Length: 193
Image (cartoon, rainbow, N blue to C red; front, top):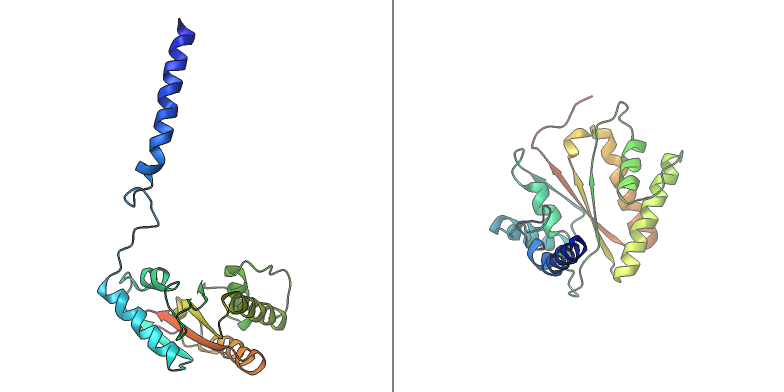
């Protein structure tokens, strides 16, 4: 008698599993999905597309804390298309504060966010590894352009910005890849050292 009850309960559990995926896949239950595209996101996407199409090499997106800049970038970064209609590959990295503000720290963070083994590599090696990562992404997407989104730039000191110039120059001069770097930051907040 008890055994029959177990089968009945098990049957109900199986029925629940069959309906659960359709019910719990609703955006209300998924924490990181369901962002609505807002007019501000569309404006940002249009601006980035315009910068890409006109050959710009860099731009700043700035606004107050918690204004939605990062959410906008994460939402639209896979939707930006080149003139050929193909999605342009991109990478997002959020800069961190470290005890030593070095160019190597920037390269380490770029490599870490690209799932590249960091180890005890020099700045030159880390820079080259990230450049190779970008070229691989461009080859997979059959794109001559790449967008690098750098968040929390205000955490860097001005001398660390030269790391991005180095990456840009290598991609342009060696691989003929157009790199658009979008810096995202709280306005007027660079540390002066």
